[in-house]
Length: 341
Image (cartoon, rainbow, N blue to C red; front, side, top):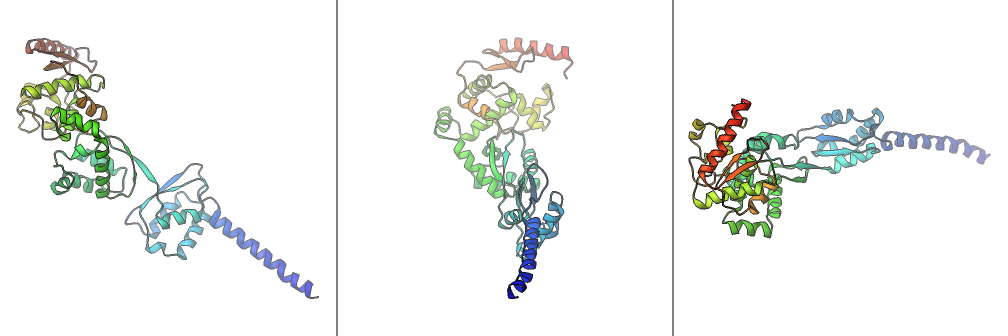
């Protein structure tokens, strides 16, 4: 009789246990999202638990979100929310997601530094990839004290950014971002590049500045060392650079397709028609190809260049001003024929 009585309790107990295990599995261990690809949740510094729930609600199944909320109620997560970019991978359960968010196990992202012309444009692009807003990034890039901490001025600060792709965290602070860019800059300027700059009599910032002009002059990587060599010759002989892209930068009008004589009088330290030598800083973040073109410039005797009249994006080079005028006349004729103002 005792065995029969004990079975009456065992069977319901096992059934209850099975139900409990099933519910635990259903709410806590089944995939949180039904999507076949990974999804990302971005938790901001000012998020509270309700806004976290709202963000998860867009990707989570109803029962897994309930499981997540249950885990939150029995933890301190609601009072210690960590910002970050969290990957919800296919098959991740509510428990796995909860552990990621609670422990700050965020995923990094690939941040590409673009070859842009101005600090405000760089700040805008970076803010679209990072938690930091564009204003805070821009202020750091243009603040004299911040720039000086890394050995730059507001005019040369863009020299620190080497256009490449880097692994960073979405919620990295502006200071940590600048620290990383400074570290990457030092890695870029290896022994070989540093020695080549010294052999030219240039600082790293001067190389970057000249490279920015070369990049603006031509998109043809094969021609860049020739262009760099021509500008280097002008610097060595004390000639003004007379680089049209610096006029566009001085006028802050990058849509200009044709430089006219009256534009050359703009009062700006970036006007290389009026000022001898390099401008005070780069007119864009140059490409790696542009930087290496300056460091490996072609040694020749050309002092002049003019865009080719076939609009191929390359240039006719000249040693004398007379020859240059002939090239300029051909290009001007081609512009007029195409109605380019």
